[in-house]
Image: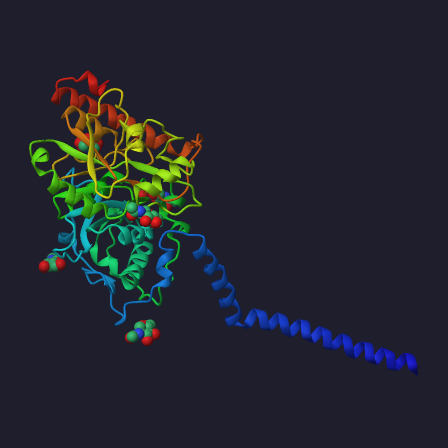
Length: 438
Ligand SMILES: *[C@@H]1O[C@H](CO)[C@@H](O)[C@H](O)[C@H]1NC(C)=O
Ligand SMILES: *[C@@H]1O[C@H](CO)[C@@H](O)[C@H](O)[C@H]1NC(C)=O
Ligand SMILES: *[C@@H]1O[C@H](CO)[C@@H](O)[C@H](O)[C@H]1NC(C)=O
Ligand SMILES: *[C@@H]1O[C@H](CO)[C@@H](O)[C@H](O)[C@H]1NC(C)=O
Ligand SMILES: *[C@@H]1O[C@H](CO)[C@@H](O)[C@H](O)[C@H]1NC(C)=O
């Protein structure tokens, strides 16, 4: 009798426990609220560890639900254009491997904006860096985006979301570069952004990550971004290079202050030194903060460990010792001759410098070298600026990646192009041994 009652009790308890387990499993799986809370927690943590554009999360969308950007071609709802809207690439100016759609967004030009453009290039996975440039660069920004196949929609979605949330996007222009074989022929519909939670674009899978034969035409993009700039002065830069505070307005001020000596110089460009900092520190905005990081070994000149000659600029030791002043000043003028024949400075120039060779791909490396060589042959002067600098997005690259076998084909193509162009240069210019033409 007793044992029977005990058994019933046990069975009853077991049934209750079992039902509870089943119910809780159903509840966790079925309840979307629970899931979204989990996801959100994961995302919120990400904003603490900084990633490009994560600061936009704290912003709220444009109050009237409209965009800060000046869209064309039916955007931001859908992209519609016809053949006559497309251009050839700037250097070839004839049918080639790429087509350009200029001014998909055209910046709103206001007179108080400093007249120097930050011109840059992106692939879909670098799109969220546009926000980081827009928040520190006071001048216009010209972005050339390489958008093969489905990369187009990824890029436009992120840009549209930034346009919806970040007032500084009014200064941004956007141009699209398509491989000739996949110019979109159908109208493309873009979703309206719901919030300012811009995803980390570096996590995106681009076409190039699945198909190595799609090469990044980095110099087509650089040329497009430069020729589309409406100001006389242009800084052609890589988008991970963040300018020091007030660089654009201080540069214009420097030009005015030193007008006389500068007017007497021809073929001159203004070099902005580049540094990199540890991933644990904030990007320095002024020279005293930068110098402090350098002294405590949390900053080095760009690519110090992977390509010591690429960015080590003439007079660097003295530059690092000179006193920090508020204003940008001319520091030292040099030519890019031996021993600086492998130097690849980033500079503010005009529209009259040689274009970048569009047959060189990013995968093949050394994509700026031919332009540099041509500028050496043209006897350009490189005026290095003091109290102005660029900082690579945090993280110091300490080791060369040796086994990048996927680059081999592209490197061969680039070196063939390099040799062809050297031949052209030998015919065009009298050989200048100082530029190491070989
Ligand atoms: C903006 O759009 C969102 C989503 O479409 C909507 O929920 C919100 O009410 C709109 N806000 C205003 C001020 O119109
Ligand atoms: C192409 O579009 C432009 C405006 O974007 C328009 O002026 C032109 O007529 C169009 N051409 C054709 C053939 O549809
Ligand atoms: C990869 O890209 C090339 C060049 O656009 C194309 O010819 C090829 O069909 C692509 N391969 C795949 C698997 O999509
Ligand atoms: C330099 O930047 C630091 C950090 O943002 C700031 O505390 C300091 O006041 C700045 N110095 C000058 C001279 O602007
Ligand atoms: C790039 O390659 C194409 C095709 O091989 C050639 O016609 C063109 O002249 C090259 N461009 C330059 C700048 O060398």
